[in-house]
Image (cartoon, rainbow, N blue to C red; front, side, top):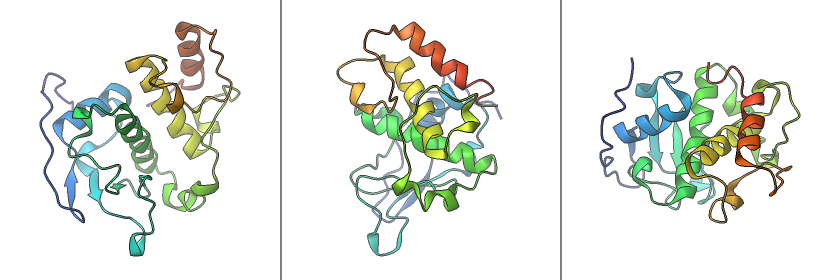
Length: 187
């Protein structure tokens, strides 16, 4: 079902800790800027609690092991599309990649067990996005969105996981490198 991009973002459902909600219209519109209609947005749930038992999910970590997003208090937002905090939006787009992966049949939960030890950083040395690990895919795609949306600046440079970034490189050249490994995405 196509998403009407002219819809204005609305504030998300106010949910208490331990609650769950669906994506807001604004979050769907935000995600569509990168993922288009390749995600079934009506199947995505946002939890405001730890995925792990006994609140073992670190407060600063979001998890999306099964196509549903799990945020602790420090990272949760009622509507990520309305966030002024770029880092929260960037994390949301990263987690949406895990939704995309899960909906494409990738074993996000199984591989996620080892994500604490995974390398999120990447180089542009692979043939395409599917040759990167799941966390590298999510970092690469969310960094691409960040570059397109906010550019590369002092305010955003700490968010990028590109290990070969050269500050003398033009944004145009950097975008070309992202596009070269993202061919076929979101598909």
